Length: 441
Ligand SMILES: *[C@@H]1O[C@H](CO)[C@@H](O)[C@H](O)[C@H]1NC(C)=O
Ligand SMILES: *[C@@H]1O[C@H](CO)[C@@H](O)[C@H](O)[C@H]1NC(C)=O
Ligand SMILES: *[C@@H]1O[C@H](CO)[C@@H](O)[C@H](O)[C@H]1NC(C)=O
Ligand SMILES: *[C@@H]1O[C@H](CO)[C@@H](O)[C@H](O)[C@H]1NC(C)=O
Ligand SMILES: *[C@@H]1O[C@H](CO)[C@@H](O)[C@H](O)[C@H]1NC(C)=O
Ligand SMILES: *[C@@H]1O[C@H](CO)[C@@H](O)[C@H](O)[C@H]1NC(C)=O
Ligand SMILES: *[C@@H]1O[C@H](CO)[C@@H](O)[C@H](O)[C@H]1NC(C)=O
Image: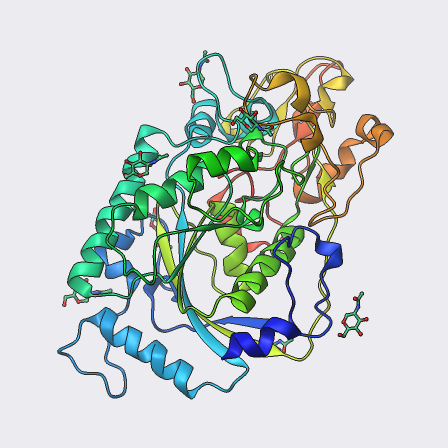
């Protein structure tokens, strides 16, 4: 019903990547997290160490008006969501999103191995090391197991709690999410009318960074991996990642709203599974007005969302991307106490914005990338990086989202350049400009 109302009013093209062509002046979807149903949306719940499989996905035990205790808690909650929708005005809909983070990928393991500063400053910009690859990172064995834990838990909950089946499935186009969605849901008997056939959405990808783990393969190889899945949203090549610029949190939130708008205006189902990333789920939670809640690899968070379709609202924004700098060689120093940055080795060219390697030449042959990937990020940011800008970018471009590096400079010789790098820190999640979770998690 509401989808008929809004499909015309809010025409969000499937190719939502073309941000500039979207015309949302005729409507605005306002999202609110409805609290009081899940432990995760309560300020008192500690996200660190939270195990969704130990607490029924976090659903709070309670009775709702008219509910009967003969029903399971999830059946009662399902009836409550139906009641909310039945009582809602025609411009309002409630949906339950299951936001699942991919299992551990090779990039996660490598970040642990090298330490976050060195990872961000140098290693993440390579496609791997001599023994591991992490561009568009695949799942590690541990990551597969985490997805299978999710699989077993879903299966248990569907059978024992009789919780509603997801009615639609969405995934980021990055390999670790595609595979996590598959390991989680493949083999679960689903209703014939709600089959497990995910729609791959370009804008559910991880925060765009210069990390090669966030650079996706071509559409053909995604289609070949899971031939029945819907990849219509994707262009053949990745036109967003360019190895030079990165999304700010504001740019990422604007793009998260775009993909949510696309889903909410194009899908009249209530129970949706979305497989994405730590940074992107963090951004989606911000857009939904949910408190910050960091997920460990493979974890799932449910959110009850109220969406109001308003005739107008704040205009869509497309905050620019910013140029990232990095070291040209393995950093001299990278230890926890230098968490604000790395000390690059070499000359002043060490802290640079030029990609360490070229997309056309340096990926393994047949990896699914090509030089045309290296477009300017017209999609969500609109920042234009010209040839000269690539070579003249100063370090100041990164200072707005990094801590001062002056303290480290004092410890180095004149030929050493200090590059500040975005740092991952779970404690930093509150600041809207924190880069904490946007980097390839
Ligand atoms: C956007 O939609 C409004 C209302 O339908 C229309 O008046 C306006 O011309 C459109 N703008 C663009 C850029 O298409
Ligand atoms: C949250 O839990 C972690 C361990 O899982 C603990 O170290 C931390 O102190 C807890 N934080 C609060 C505010 O209780
Ligand atoms: C709800 O109650 C059941 C037992 O009746 C318990 O196992 C479960 O942990 C409770 N859930 C929460 C979120 O407290
Ligand atoms: C490559 O990185 C992995 C961590 O992901 C590490 O285990 C391995 O030892 C590294 N290989 C080399 C040659 O340094
Ligand atoms: C998809 O999941 C099934 C079931 O776990 C598994 O057998 C299959 O290998 C997976 N496919 C891919 C491409 O990972
Ligand atoms: C969206 O909803 C929130 C909470 O109800 C409200 O504070 C805010 O003003 C609304 N935004 C718009 C654009 O109507
Ligand atoms: C797509 O990527 C695959 C590797 O994943 C490669 O073999 C194929 O040639 C690529 N296709 C195109 C059209 O570039």
